[in-house]
Length: 414
Image 1: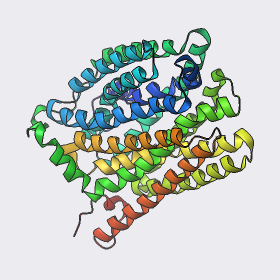
Image 2: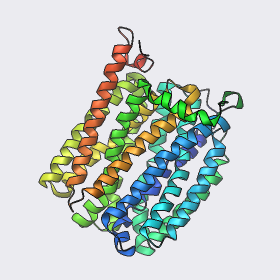
Image 3: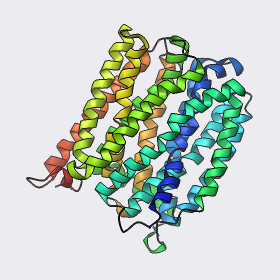
Image 4: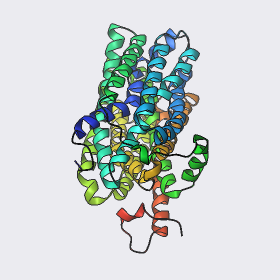
């Protein structure tokens, strides 16, 4: 670990990984229950999938709120407030008696849940420089991958012995546990480094950040990738459980394979990013995402390979998160050390905002087969690649002649 970080880095990483896991655990744990919600709340597939879109909408827009608060008041206090909101939202979901009520409480849950991930990313930026932060983000992603690995498995077992409401009671308890863990985390933003401008200027700062190609290209490319991921998250419960008749308690095993791949690639990224540079690895990941997305669309359309024809391309697509997410986020934030919270908020909002659209599209165009999921993931993978290539083109055009990949992120307009 770097000397600039505290000696208890491992404890910090454990707490940060828990905070960054709230998006995954709040979504993945109740995925096996989606078909059950259709019957219990007397609704349809499209509306049930909108509970995912509502969560992602709250998660996306909420980040724009927490980032500037973290830059002004430090990281810990806003995270604590967010965890309280997550707890209340989880209780509301557990007590919901209609799908509309659940949608509302999912928004509350999401607004609280997003405080942890957005400010955890800012904490990493507080502590580490660009390549090192990409390495540490990969470590965090490896650690937090336990949540989506265990989430569907635990959710499926809860359905066997309890009900979908029990899943949200457990999420409420997880929020309280994270709140207790937060007090062991040191504040990483010293008072003298905090923003002093009025919060009313936040919108102007977001507009300035959104116009900066150094941030925009990475954020949009990552957004396309997240769109594909959330099409998979929203689509596979129905593709696996309804279409291919996988028992809900076994659904987590199929999802767990993807998480193992994600963890392995994140581990690989920690070993090679300091040598190869985050820019080069990021571009490679986008190529793999595009190709695996096209393969998934073909398999879903033709039925070739049955359930394995879906599972294998999805495994590859989800695994390269280890190359795409950590490196794109680290590269996007590298040029904004004094606005790490706001920049992290904007990147996160664009990432999860794309998930709102892809999950909604899945409901709008659902035809009872995996085909809709397949073409959405393919379009997302291609969009991820194209925007990454455009970003690289712009950075090379703007950088001094002969600049290396390590220097590209620092390029400025002429």
